Length: 120
Image 1 (tube, rainbow, N blue to C red):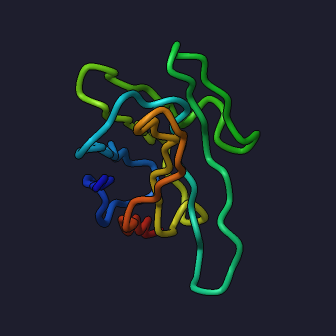
Image 2 (cartoon, one colour):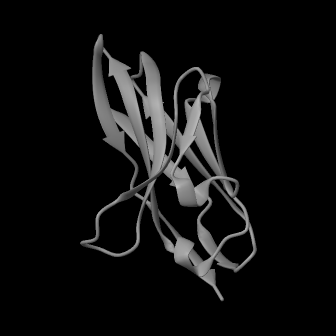
């Protein structure tokens, strides 16, 4: 079995910073792309925040460029999201996503989500 466990969410004032972490554990051959998504409310579509390849190449949704930084530690199968200059509009549940290779096949996994609340 594979688990993605997120941490680092919480309540922060506008202009503040948070760092999210997501660690993959279990029977893993390797981890390909990893990403962060967010969902503002139940029933709303999840929005892509940023992606990062196994080689460290990152891409961001336009509104997050310059404020958010995605990174990863391949030795720990962990992806991070450093969020700076947070705005109330960033309030959402943030989900980790990973493409994980097991037994020679690639599977998609999601974390359970971590709440980020930005107060004005």
